[in-house]
Image (cartoon, rainbow, N blue to C red; front, top):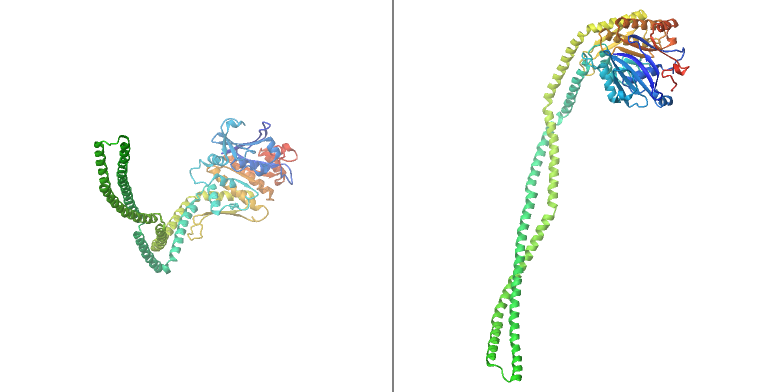
Length: 584
């Protein structure tokens, strides 16, 4: 992977404001043109732009800057991968997105670009830069980027302890950069975490040892209480009781309805009998009216026909007999019906009272409430019983847990030994790195130093088991600026290591790395050594930011003549600034 070119384009003006072409091999110096103080020229802004295009957020220094907003700046980084060109872009006013274009000539028509959300853009940069690494399990490109692009703010305190990151992750990243498999610590830590979980369970169980007898007695007591409560619920079968009440109610209701029908029928019969008696009485009265007719005829014709007189008498006798005999008959019937009605009415009242009682039972919630209370108690006891059983079961697992813990300890020891043997496989790679570091140190300061890789095979709880710890030291490193130089040489060692083994990620960016060291010749020797080495190998890029006064003027001149200065930045004129404008 080669970083080819950085372009700053104004979408408002539709023109390229600035363009920086990088050396594909060797040294790339971003130089501030003023002595004493070239802050504000844009060296760090240039590095931050590259960092942003490789997946971080848009630099804060670019936010809410009027000139940048008005120009509508589009940053484009051209990279080369296996002879293929890939363009990565960020629009400063659109920080939530990144843009990718594969192949073709550089153009700024967004219809030709793939627009990606920030998270997807980061994934895409990881695919581009480290996807092809099949040999080692690699960290995320996001975490690697902090080591590949070190800056003076947080990157030069120590070789690996970048602020905010756990040591286990720091060493994993450095092992990867030196082409050493460093995942042993993570794998063994998983086993140790499992062991710790087993130990926690054992401690809980061991707290039960003193009162396990009481717990077992409590279990028996709860079981007896449950039996008693369940027995009560069986005897107070609500559904059954309610069903019985329903059946009784229905039978009573049927009987009540039958009696009601009988009463209606008997009352109808009684009314009919009474009606019959009334009709007989009415007929007698009508016949008696013939006496008036008889007198009327006697007055008119002084006689009444004999035949009519005879018929009148017979009819009158008949109806008088009917009133006497049938009326008595109907009267007896009425008495019987009335007696029956009185009895049935009494029965009806009794049934009505029973029905009301059954209805009260069906409508009452007392039984349901009682049984619900009992069920709640049953549930509570079941929970208590479950808790007690769990404790007893846990206690019964005590020996099993001890065996599991011992087995886990043995597995940790076994895996530690295996990973230690695997670490020995990398001895040659490690020795190459150590020799290279000492060679760089010899060229730079004409002295020796220490670069050490140590496998931690301790298996105690607090041991970082499996960690391949990397230590680096040089003479007088606490002196002014020498710590920075130590980190420079350390990083350049892994860069050359990757170039030598043709691994991915063959570029390194240092921003502010040469500010503090006061030995100008040592800095120049280091820079030229790396440049010559990479040029000879025809691989690898090293980007650094420098000020004019950080090297001797002759050395600066030589580097310029060799085209190692890819950006000469100043702030006296806007055209000399990184973006060709003052924005801060």
